[in-house]
Amino acid sequence: MSATFSPVLLDALRNARHLLVFTGAGVSAESGIPTFRDALTGLWERLDPAELATPDAFAHDPALVWGWYEWRRKKVLAAQPNLAHHVIAELVTCVPRLTLVTQNVDDLHERAGNTDVIHLHGSLHQPRCSVCGQPHALHSDAPIEPEEGRRLEPPRCVHCGERVRPGVVWFGETLPEAALNAAFEAARDCDCLLSIGTSGVVQPAAMIPQLAAESGAVVAHVNSQSMTVLGPRQVSLVGPAGKVLPALIDVAFG
Ligand code: BJW
Ligand code: ZN
Image (tube, rainbow, N blue to C red; front, top):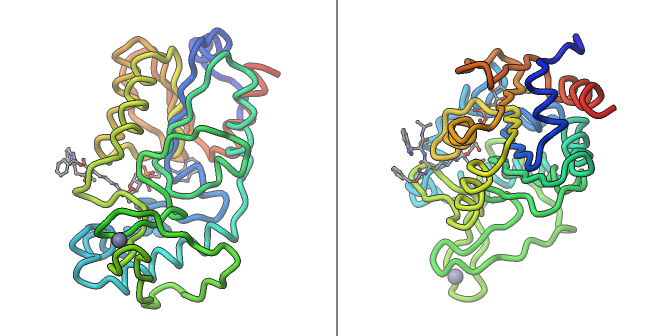
């Protein structure tokens, strides 16, 4: 890709006191993890979120929902962080302060080396009891059997005997309060925000880039599709994150 970037963005990155990196499913796409809304390959292109990603769906058919999330967890366990994850991990050494906020439920940022990742929508790897809320230990060495579409009865909580549920945030559920507060605070405080691989349609997470822009930060959207930007302090960088980010970091800090 062309290595010409807006001077406004390059200045903001080089002089950033606090850089906020905000990621979505697109950052993991090059690791082979499907996004939600991409045409043809997105999960919601062929599946109905109402049947899989709501509390009602789990109450109605727990085995369908648990089996689907185990299939996704298995895909993540078999995947590796890609160049975009690695560049984001490297960025920590380029700026005085970096906050990483993700909507993703995988652990690829952590496996690339980031610590203190703020997960707004929970994690595939931290299931909990659907009734008493106690965490449920998943044995990482246990084989995961399900293929896509295979139903699987959820395990039972060792404390109260009720069903264990995936540790993710479904539609209609509130986001973890501490994570959301920390993300909003970082959005108000940062002077530069990189929004990477997100369609920006799911609330309240979608408010983060807007909040940063309103607080005066330079905002760059890194996406395989062109993103609508408002004003001269926002830019859209079009291309796969695994190509755009290494080029950007090379020009800004190389
Ligand atoms: C690449 C690339 C590459 C591809 N390189 N780029 C206000 C208005 C309207 C509705 C609401 C509202 N407030 C709340 C709502 C309801 C709802 C909502 O927002 N609905 C909208 C969809 C209309 N929100 C909620 O219910 C939230 N809860 C809440 O607000 O509680 C309070 C409340 C409750 C009830 C009523 C009112 C208030 C909870 C939202 C939870 C979202 N959960 C999911 C599933 C998590 C579990 C799981 O993984 O199964 O989170 S939905 C799904 O979307 C997942 C994602 O984290 C999230 C965001 O998706 P993301 O990451 O942006 O992915 P995509 O696929 O959309 O986009 C990928 C992008 O990457 C694309 O742009 C590609 O072009 C790009 N890309 N390859 C760079 N290689
Ligand atoms: Zn329990």
